Amino acid sequence: MNNSAPTSREDIDKIGDLIRQGVRIDRTLPNDVYLHIDRPQPFLCLYRAPPRQPDPGTELLLGGLASYLIV
Image 1 (tube, helix red, strand yellow):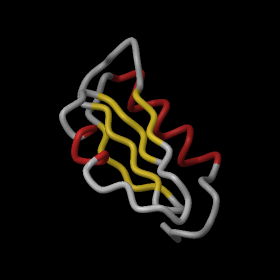
Image 2 (cartoon, one colour; image 1 turned 135 degrees about the horizontal axis):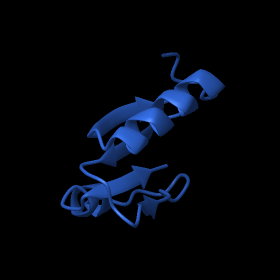
Image 3 (spheres, helix red, strand yellow; image 1 turned 90 degrees about the vertical axis):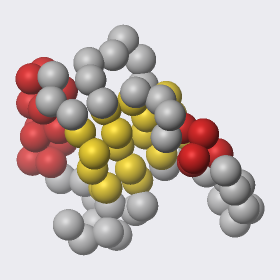
Image 4 (cartoon, helix red, strand yellow; image 1 turned 45 degrees about the vertical axis):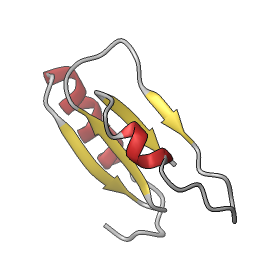
């Protein structure tokens, strides 16, 4: 997957299918976006990294959650 290209509709549909099937998802998406879904959850934690500002440790904190999206 080209890391600077937008996420394609096909990729979005594949992720949606995996979510409906209850399959674990660990996927790096374009533009350094990372999606993790360990199991079906009623929530998704979203972390948007501050632009041009270091934020050490926050991504490690999210790693303990069952589902998150890092943008």
